[in-house]
Image (cartoon, rainbow, N blue to C red; front, side, top):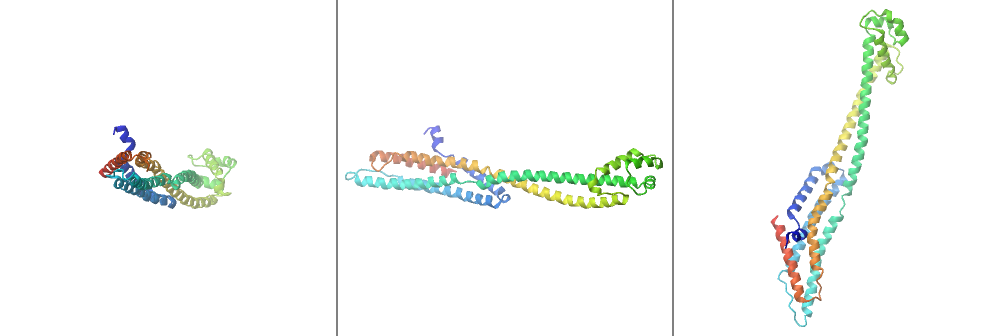
Length: 311
């Protein structure tokens, strides 16, 4: 048998073994990181691979035992011999059907829960990523508000400014009016206006604050909001990380689909070659031709078994 023919009809059992090991490794590494429905399909796939391989071995051995050293020498009119040939072909067909049925079952086995989970995990990760960004932005805003309020409190509490403002948050006009009362050379109206403009941009945090005391209360409220925002941020990050872990798991497990098909492609070579050699056989054919054809099929099955046993 030439090399091209061998590659067509002989499974690469070493490659099959490597593919199967890779599949089992993927399942072992990731199965506990996906949803129960996906885990159930992995259990089913693992069991089905073993069932298909067992059916292959049993069908192969059954065919060899059935065909080994079988000759069909015509007797009285050949009727009895043709009857034996018909019986043998029926049993041979049963062995082949067992192999073909299990192969078909594996072909039709769908990892839909994993494929669907991948799309769902990707969508969930995108949503949680947006939420995490929003929580980060909210926390940054609250911290900036607190920093600006602290800056205002520290500035307004400086003696020369505190005595001039008398505990009230000034407007720009009021700042212009008290400029001459500020004795500290490091402080000027420009700095005061920058600080009050920052406060004006934080109206939601100030809640109508008018006095220095109100600023202190606003700071306390912001401390509480920041603590709450930190909790929300941590929760969002945990949810996002969990979604990313699941996405990584189902993405890896989705690789089982081509691996399953690759493994089955090799095994199908025996199913198809067996079918091709058995197709011309019939209970009414020439007995010498039947003997030659069945011997050829038996030799093929023996070579397949020999190669399988070497792995």
